Length: 326
Image (cartoon, rainbow, N blue to C red; front, top):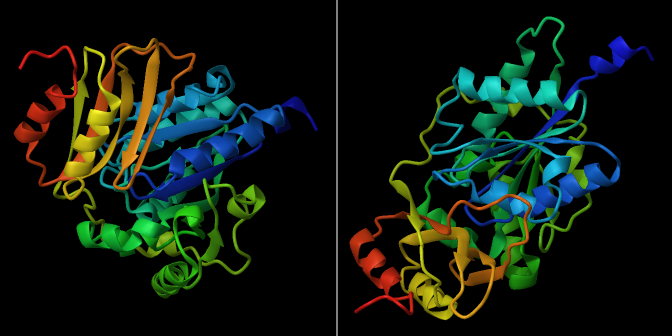
């Protein structure tokens, strides 16, 4: 194969969706690790609903920051802003990776099928002699134990599950068989064409994720009307300048579990060195040392919710800082 032919190999593009805290980034890390171990430098287009790139920094925590091409879209949802900016970011990544895979992780409030349709249309536009891409597969990660709760607070669940190739029932370790069967029956009714897989910690056969089902229709293109799936939700980024008491932070988030649906970020811990990466959804709190190569400019927490009493939340957050004056 000539050098010119190598340059024109189409990059496979994968879209990864799923509600807030479902396990999208965990799945993405597994996919990236596989590509890096193959000697490939993949591209990542990361969409965050907030102003801080927490998930992008989390990817760097694995020590692979130099092995990926990362581009971030902050402060919004790409399914609600399918303008030329998203297409340009995608085209930029495809040009950088030169035939390697590109992974798009949507915000947790995105209608993934809308993103799939927009990506397909962007890739079909002629790019002259520039490197080009092809839509390879799409997947939505589902927080199975919280499926009913998510449907109550986010009416766009059905919209999110449509128009994708694979539905991944995640967090099997936290659920029981009868409930899993109920959830699977519901999602199959919403998207009967999709492949349905099960996993814990997004540990799944990656080949099954990256290969489209044989008789899959291009449902993403048939979504005629764009839906604003972020309506009613807010995302605020809080700078936390002092070390914090993790147990108090966990208790605070638990008290606000009906309105705060996601919290993530990087904090310093009272009495300890270094930075901790914090990940929280109702019922799950994880804190682990952050050892990423990317320098963090500030300790911060991204909080996403609906009808949150923000003033009261911030007042109680201040009490999680041991040195704060009362």
